[in-house]
Image (cartoon, rainbow, N blue to C red; front, side, top):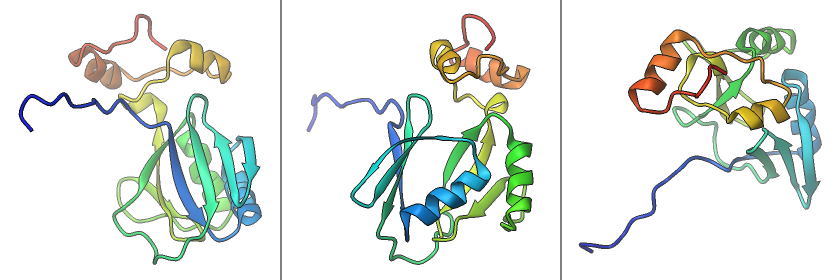
Length: 153
């Protein structure tokens, strides 16, 4: 309809992944990441990501993902690479750090410093990550869009 106002998509509140078993999923992801469990109930668990969260829920029935994936931003990409190796999790070939969880969910690991994605200063502080810095390239991309931080994070 012409003239109908559209809502603007602003970002993600959460991502939901279907897994086979919540306890197994928490153990798997706990070998890879330091996280806080926000809560759990009725076949679901919620992993805190500051002002966002990852929801794990039972019920995965579809085959393994192919190109469909999500990029999980981390403070230390190389630590994840090492944790994956230590856990015996195979990474996908190519320029990115992609892997599959035991239920076929494909995850790409992205370093916070190199991308436009930014947490607000007060959120980083609350997460104990106010020391994180953006690269000059990421700052330039943000500046080009008028989104540069008031001070480098």
